[in-house]
Image (tube, rainbow, N blue to C red):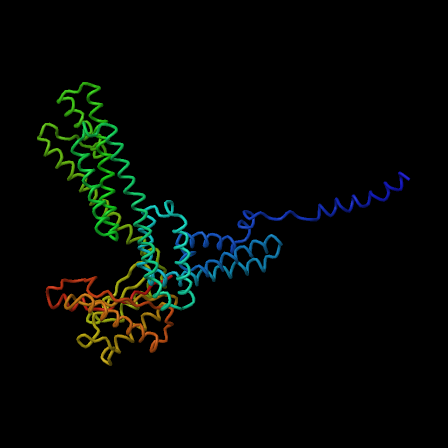
Length: 460
């Protein structure tokens, strides 16, 4: 009986052993990224996209790409390289489209994103995390409208988002910066700054009073209140630093001469990298002015070097094809029609050659030549998005100028769509009125230069 059982189980054990040996272990994600170039590329692109806020500015496209990445990993683990690479390719395509939508969202929601930035700088995410998460969710919903081409609906919801982030910033400032300044002043008083640094402490209290007065008078002036509160905190901390320094002098029984020598040693340490001794045999004013001039010379040299490097890097970053396309656009326009500027890989056409009726915005036949050239320029970059901005001189009221510039920008955009067959989803039009002059409004020539329509061709 025992022999029979052994004979029965032994083959089963052998089958189990060989079956286990035949099943290859599944690859880890790290191994997959090492073996699959397309999946690795998608992984890096997703991380870059998150850093560029594509998850907020093009949420549907970002989610699609993320799902494609997870699918690609799953297919790779199942040893199906064909479908794994196909999924990765779908994800990369989704991200390319998401970047285009995000570019439109950035332009359309520019004021919203600025209000959001200020709220985050006021530490809103840590002070009011739930409200911040809710507002960011609303932002993604509006960005999704842009993805679906519902630009008017997105525009209509901008103001509510701006108001929400501004209220969040105000509440965060009151909880954050103002409280921090009050704490710093209280700490300074406990450390006897009122005795050793009374002038500095008094300035801190005055700045604190101004911050509170600003918020009491107008709760929307958060930026001004924040500036006063930040200054109050800095002054309070400075008063504590001064207090500690004076106490150190007292502990060492410094004479006035010791204090002066200490001060000169500090200047010597600061100037040591310059390689030349300071002229302490001259009046202190000469010492300070000489050190200041040396620093200015260094900064000027640094800025010149940085500018040269930046220009060189920009030129290197463009392919021969891109440079040729930019050169082609620059050659389209005469000096009387437009000025064309290269902004890295983007192109700005500042068209001052439009002929509008005074107070009018219609594009008449005398503008058709210029408009056809603009269409040619846009079509040179088929994957670009277009930001059209209207500008006026300072004559007339600000509101009238803003509306006029908006109408002119929109009519240029409409011409590109209707005549140039350029998709409306690639275009955003904004009127700035007289807010962004490029010349003086005190002369007829300057005012003529300021009356312009700018077409920014933004390449991915």
